[in-house]
Image (tube, rainbow, N blue to C red; front, side, top):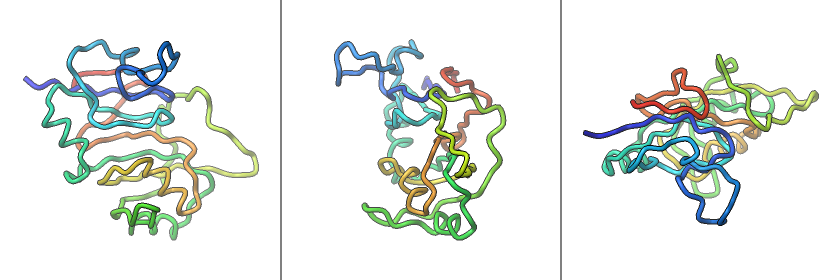
Amino acid sequence: MTRVILFNKPYDVLSQFTDKGTEGSPRRTLSDFIDVPKVYAAGRLDRDSEWLMVLTDDGKLQAKISNPRHKIAKTYWVQVEGEPDEAALQALRKGVELKDGLTRPAQAQRIDAPANLWPRTPPVRFRKSVPDCWIALTIREGRNRQVRRMTASVGHPTLRLIRAQIGAWSLNGLETGKWRDA
């Protein structure tokens, strides 16, 4: 029977079980949170982002989630610098030109700050003179740091990034640093 685990990865945690890059490193990894044998992360995620991760013991499912050709929708809550106008959101919806080519069209809309949002350590920088806001962005591809590059390309750098949903799986009340079976 296939095992699927949903994990709310905290900020500054590597999305792998070991940190082979620096022996004796104090960097946290998945093994600091999940003690389940033979499950593997479906995709690699940035250390400086927070988000829903799917882990599984099924290699085919892992490949399906990870490979962009399957076009599984991934929804992000993005705190951005400034307040994107309709033109910026429309550019995200149409696809933006990045150094590695045009992105696929995305769903993009402004949202209120997510309910029950946990504090981030360290906190996001705050500047009195520059407002910020949240957008929900749904993409169906997975380029390196894509969401951050997309928001920056429309003039609104990402301050905080939380992946809230992958296909039918969502954070749905899962506390940061916690996991559950799907």
